[in-house]
Length: 218
Image (cartoon, rainbow, N blue to C red):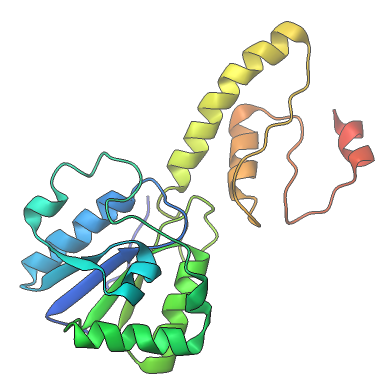
């Protein structure tokens, strides 16, 4: 069973903004709902930024109330939309993003995303001192400090369900199937799906394998 430490917030604000960034992950909507409901319980106003960091740079946000996040917990994707913003790699752009947040009266930002999103969030707080909280949500499970990121378990189970059907065909025809799963540079999905699906061989991005070595194991 997972246990969580007692974390006392060092920085709080009356107005909080939340955005989802990078690849969408199952559970993002549940996270948005939790941020909004908890924020409202703390007497804060909560604003949703539409389309990640790109939306932030455009000042595209809307106030979220309890009814805004009703009936979304079971839905995939993200109601706030998402995007990959290459402009956010620039220090000057991150500085401008903070200016936008301050002009709109936002005191703190919650970023729901993966490795790239967290890099931008970390640099923005480090460079400007603006309070940023990261919630790890990526099927790749490549965020340090958390056992399972939001979306990882669903991704693994979805892949295993597909492989269960592929195994029927492989058995019927005595064929070998090469199944590729997502994960970018991280092999967490591959190793979990390989174990759960009964793969003969699992090829991971962290380990170099030759075609000859793979063939010998099959």
